Amino acid sequence: MPDPINLAHELPFYLLWLAIGYFIGSIPFGLVLARLGGYGDIRAIGSGNIGATNVLRTGNKKLAALTLICDALKGTLAVFIASRYGPGDFIVCAGLGVFLGHLFPIWLKFKGGKGVATYLGVLIGVFWPAFIAFAIIWLAVALITRYSSLSALIATLATPFILRGFEAFQYSELFFVLTLLCWIKHHENIKRLLNRTENQIGKKG
Image (cartoon, rainbow, N blue to C red; front, side):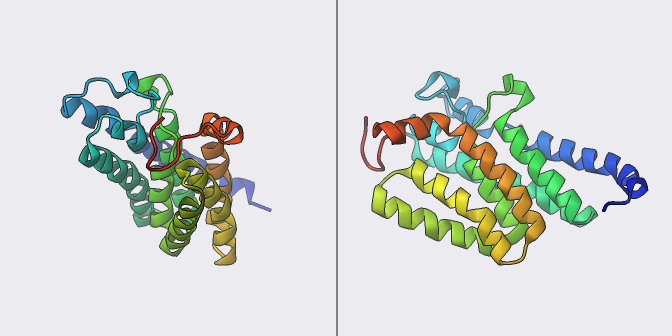
C-alpha cells in the first residue's frame, strides 16, 4: 500500500509532469502545418479532425506525413524529458498528459485528434520493442482487411497485453488507459466498421 506521506510529497511532481505532457501534447501540428501550407483551417476539411489522416485529404502527402511525425514525436519528447528528471511514475504522468493534450487541447476547445500517432510516440518513448509489435499487428490487419482504423484499434487493444508480456507492468497500466481513450475517440469509425461503411485503404468514398 502506498505511503500517504510519500504520496503527498510526490503529488505536486506528478501534477507537474502531467501538465508538462499536456502542454506538449496540445500543440495542434495538423492545424498549424495545414495553415502554413496554405490550406486554411483543417477543421473545415473532411472529418474536421486535426490529425494526419484528415491532413491527407488536402492531397498533400508530405504535409500529412510531417503531421504524423510531429504528432508522434511530441509523445516521445514528453516521456523522454520526464525520464531525464524522475522515476517511472513521472514518465507515466507525462505520457498520460501528452495524450490528453492531443485529444483535448485547451486551445481548440478540447477538440483534438484521435491519438494514434501520439500513442505510438509515447510507446516508442517508454518501450520501443512494443512499438515493433504494434507495427506488425497493424500491418497484418491492414493487409487482411484493408481498414486502417480497424488495424489501429486492434493494435492498440493488443498493446497493453504485449507490455505485460514483456513485464513492463507500469506501462501496461498506462496503455490500458490510453487504449480506452483511443477507442472512445474512434467511436464514429467503430460505427462505420459495424455498418460496413468505413473507407478502406486505397479506396475513396
